[in-house]
Every structure is written in C-alpha cells, then in structure tokens.
Image (cartoon, rainbow, N blue to C red):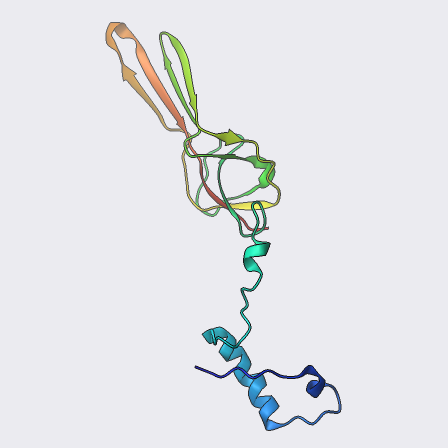
Length: 150
C-alpha cells in the first residue's frame, strides 16, 4: 500500500523550494487515498451527515402522482411523486361496488429531480367471470424505488 505523507501547507507557498520529497508526496497521496491507507484522509468523512432523507443521493419508495407507468431511468420532478410503502392501491370492482385497499402513503412534498430505479405498469387489470354473469375486476397500481439525482 502506498504511504501517505502529511504536507505542511506553509512549505507549498510561492517562493518555497520544491523538493523531491514534496513532489513524491503530491504524486503518492492521491494513490494512498484511493487505496484506503489508514493514515490518509477519507473522501467519505461527513458523507453520512450530508445524506439526509430527500437530499441528493437519497432513496424513496414512491408512485407517480398521475398513476403513470414508469420505466428504469425515467426522471420525474419530486412534486410528481407520492411516497408509499409498495403496492399502494388495489381496486376491486364487482356487483357489490368498489373496494379500495391502501398501504401507507404520504404526499411527502418531495423536491428536486428523481430517477426511477425500477419499473411498473399501471395498465395491469385482471377480470374474472363470476357466476350469474357477474364480472369481478382487480386493478393494481404500483410503486417503485427512486433516487434523487438533482
């Protein structure tokens, strides 16, 4: 593993001699960082503190506000998404009316631009013939994983 050399910034000011030790450190230090040398500073220090819910790089499970189907890589403004817990609605229609079942859903007020990391097709509908000429229909509306990219 490449060694990390701590440089004093006062030694790098204009007029200071450029020694071979300084040049070697300037060459090796980026390598030591990339190799994860324990004495080198980590590029990830503070990353967890900057990764907050709704912030750039964060993830959420959501559906499209307009019940639109989405594909991997599609981008949507945060205002076009509603956070949810999976399949957010199943609508069943039959002779007795319509039954709606919802899983946890919240209009999270998302901001920024979100990229779809999955896919779902909201055109899925299954109809079943019941006795007596009745039909039962199930419409499933989906959600998927999104990442904030802007």
